[in-house]
Image 1 (cartoon, rainbow, N blue to C red):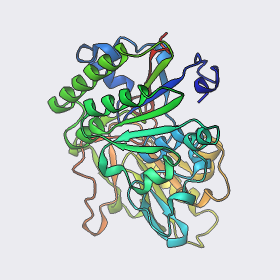
Image 2 (image 1 turned 180 degrees about the vertical axis):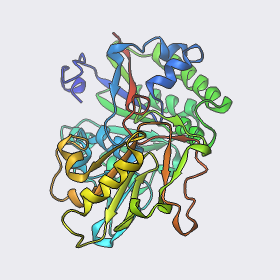
Image 3 (image 1 turned 135 degrees about the vertical axis):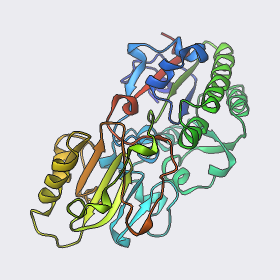
Length: 359
């Protein structure tokens, strides 16, 4: 936004007339470095100044909300992959669970960058797969931008070029979900993930080579990813003290959020956190809601967002994933690639620059 307004801002970007932000879901800096030989165009631009921290939790709904609003989860209100909706007394998927109880226009609480630019007369466009065009998350975090549906990665870059060729000032947001989807299904070390990375790198190089003097590109990610084998799944619902007084389980397998029964004793959070410390201290960061907020995990937290955050949080620091498992629940246990926690593999992402923004 600063570049379109004359330059500067936190990133100290030069002025540009047209800007494209490419968001590659799940592309962590560690994975990109590990496969640098297969992504030479992108990896050549990855060094200390082009690696940033994505924020917490490292999950798509929260991170994309932060990207498109400039706020932290404690302000925009998207605090996990699944989170408590107090009005419904239920944990709801923050990617796909939108309804009258969780309205896109109000549950995500901040104006978007696209809305702010529209107020200044600068148009914005979002380019992504057609299936996301009318989703609740799109309406929540991409409001203010026109949605352009495009199938393949190559078609999305072509659509961005076509928008740039219209001239004038504009912001384009280009979404690439494929790497994250493949990592969940097969792992980021799979051949299919690598082939998709190579295809993305080729399109990035092709598009960058055609950028004009007043056209800039930024490529980043919402989070990185780690492959967690099934042998490293921790089924905590079988341990009574780890679910004592717990009414709901939310978050991600690598960042579990535990919600206590309403009206629990004042020390219930501390007792539950202590039980987790005794069992899992060597494998996870464990914090009560108050401790997590004091540590700045969610940024400044507004009162309306406070009850959406778990009473106790368990963030994996070793290569494990936590599952409730009670009542035969196996949701998510087929996933190989996972994210959500505070490790460097999950939090560090690239911030690559091309065209007018090249370093």
